[in-house]
Length: 240
Image 1 (cartoon, one colour):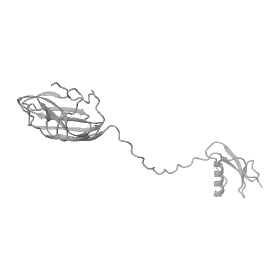
Image 2 (spheres, rainbow, N blue to C red):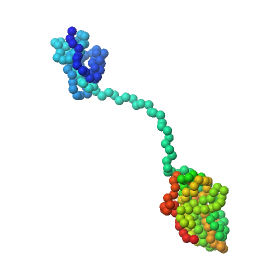
Image 3 (tube, rainbow, N blue to C red):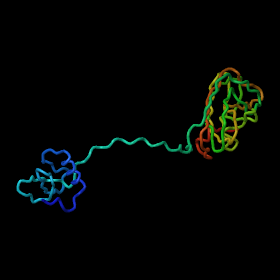
Image 4 (cartoon, helix red, strand yellow):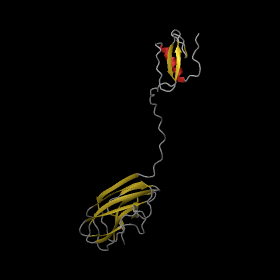
């Protein structure tokens, strides 16, 4: 009996041989994948495979030590979603707006809201940013204009931006020609629920201001605190 193939054979060779024996067809088997090859022989009757040199009448085969690359497998199933990450340190948390008729602002008023307000809630480490405008008219009154906050109960009305000494405000003259007076502000009021809106301090001892037009604006809560002295913290700065 002729001897079987001896020596160490790579797994690719064994697979190729098994495929050939099951197929039972001819003996032409291409060497795939490149690299080294092995010379083998096969008996036509028993199909016994052995290492070359071949005996008379047996078929010669050249097998590759590395088979061709197989087809790509199917995509695996999607794994389960991981837990949600923590909330990031920045971004808008909530917002509000106001629009409505001006209030009458009496003489020596101190800071009072020029018109309607919005209500926002903040926690420690959060800030409020606001912008507004009010169309005002008077027979002549000096006034300070800024953005204010007040507790949900309504008093006291104080600067939203308290980073500048004495607060940040615009000092304006309100005359018989109706003009729009803008205000901006940013502040970190701390935990609480606040009324936010444009406010006016009528410093005149003679003439009231309004109510002749509308006040409108918006404010939003963000995560983070205002940096002292930054331009974001200071609205329009004037003098008393």
